[in-house]
View 1 (spheres, helix red, strand yellow):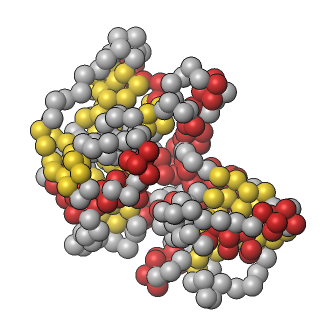
View 2 (view 1 turned 90 degrees about the vertical axis):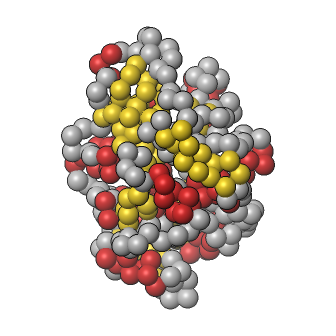
Length: 338
């Protein structure tokens, strides 16, 4: 089968590789759609921390935001999975450690991460093998486009839930990328007045086109009370800004991550009685995200700017803008296409 293989920083190609086999407890999925993520770009540039910590190594197959159809099942797997449309959890805990037994397999110290960590091949290929227990069925209302947006949506939903806002509250999202805009959508669905802060005029204009009129730069951010702030950026100074602008007794949610250490003043955290929450993974919110998409509470389709074949993935990771692409921040890949 064809797969996109990353062999070194900046070096990748589409290769013919052995098709996966459904070993006991696992399934093979025919991949229909894959999202390209900022994490994939960090692997492409060689900046990803996992590479330097020994959790990941080249060559590797990227792709952890995916949707497809189960085409084969291994021994011990319920055959009713055959032919079902699914997406899957990225985080694959060992299912035996204390974290896994407590329902937090997404922080298992021995976890694999699909297309990211522990040598588990990702979905930028025609087929993918994953444990059956990691699957989440997709209803008819959630097509492949939405299915491949469940994983980033789950991260964003967890961030919105951690913000703890509702009608009458005002929330600020820092960073209008995919996760930030999805978080803004979930915050709006919860009834909050949502503000977005970003850098470029184009990204802020896109946020406004999605129904977020309160879109600002750092210089124009109004001096208004924010009951919660979600930092979905990769800017090293914004974690501290989030703490500065949140209201006393408010909540700050950190889901973005900078390329170098960022700091906050815990005196401010304490004296303002602020609750700070970190969000790593979508795992606990995947089913709720699927339900939100299926019911129309959140529609992330406009975030997808373009869909390309495997042959264009390298260009996308290198920062090339696809001709005819829309204004959204997300590129999707259809491994079945040219």
